[in-house]
Length: 279
Image (cartoon, rainbow, N blue to C red; front, side):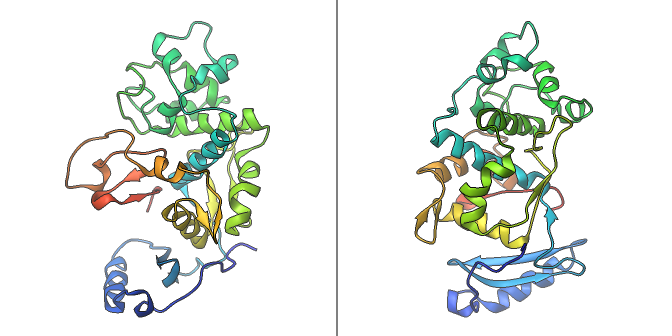
């Protein structure tokens, strides 16, 4: 059932964490509006956790754009299984959905550009795309003003196209494709994913899981894709997905401007994160 404990529990002191620092963190977070849950993992053990009612360990929570990091993981599996490469042209797989006369920038768009939010769109087309019944065709019909790979614009619709690619190549929705590859090894149960009108998992948003599900994914990436001594992620994918693949601003003082990986944000001090609306 959702919320089943999988990670070991430990006192903060046993993992070299100052308990007063954790109390200070909780005190600071209480000032945030509607903090739903918190789980702190150190050296693979949970050293602090808590939920604000009505939220609870077994309650699924919509992850919003944190869903993107799960979509990226699905792409990693598809790459390892030889179904595509990150340098494949998008239209090599989705020509049937493309305009009759695609412009040159669209023709040059690669899977890598979808992963790194550098599709070449001047503004985020997501709102326009999601107002249609066919999100993939609508995305491919959008003007691509810049050379793909050169211009960062956050683009949830682009992540949906990654979901559509995986579904087309595997014959399975993301939720089912990730089942034996990611969810079962990590003990993720009961996850759900909203779909487009065409029956494709939204990809860029819409997944729901528990707090410990998120912690497990983060720990898996921290451990270079290894879980309980078993390799789960393809060799090298964790490092590649969380590395700075493209610049996105360059301001040295804020975490939002430290570059972007494959649907993971880079932060200061060498950190990386998955991130969704409302924290």
